[in-house]
Picture 1 (cartoon, rainbow, N blue to C red):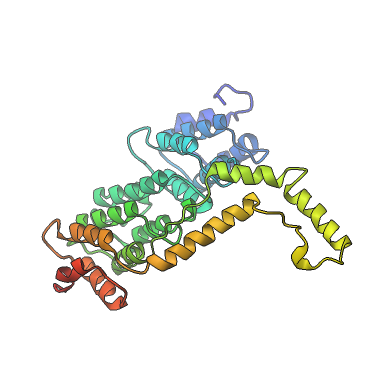
Picture 2: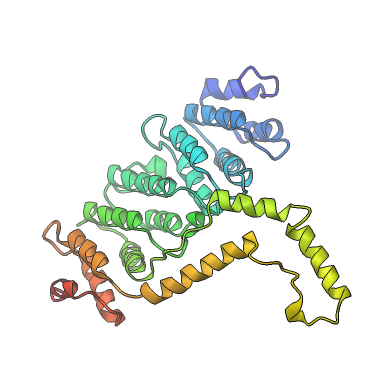
Length: 339
């Protein structure tokens, strides 16, 4: 959708000229750009063009921009809720057009995408975490929306934002911390040593790192291609829900058979296969997760010893692991002896 498109409201030119947007202009955009509840790529590009120009924004614009991008990338995804690599790369390129995420609107939109999507490339999560880290270290209050931000210091608002990203719904790992996320948390802890950080930062650091070491899940959500197979199965006239209904009706009509002999569910349907895979992954996870193994121990030792010092948060993490009573690799003994 180009600026000369007849469907683009006249107010867009005014917005671009003034580099500001009012609630009334946002309402105008909602009515004309988003009348059917769908946002195509041309419309999404137009909204980014407007956002890149703005120097003054209102809350209504931030809400509209985030909602529109969620509609475009999450609700209209195929299958719904799955942000694919191509769409993620497009969004990443747009928000990094000038080198970095430059404002609260873009960061909040990214976080909401992670919260609303069933699955998204981990690169989007890392992008959000890196944006928070960079803004904290450089005191960029515009990105974090916190006028009281102190450069190099983690306050409660920043910790809350980190928590939203770490435990977002996307990627199906909302209950587990990945290695990449754990690495970034250690980097942020190292970069803010000696700062007057909020106590909530210590709590998040210990909880997230112990989560990675003790609860990390090997489960990965079904791929977009697998979920497309499920969608196709659901809509097949000879199978899926329609076929299930016919088998159910046939089973009820032949009540002489026992329930166990009624093959109304069929065998190894795509949905059952997806569910079974998750159950097997969770069973395996429970058997091996609640321990710190050799590989995890080597990583933890390297992360703590690389600067020759033991920070307060690192000591608190070791205290937590020691007090857990769970199996810990023998190589951790020298570290544990230091606390």
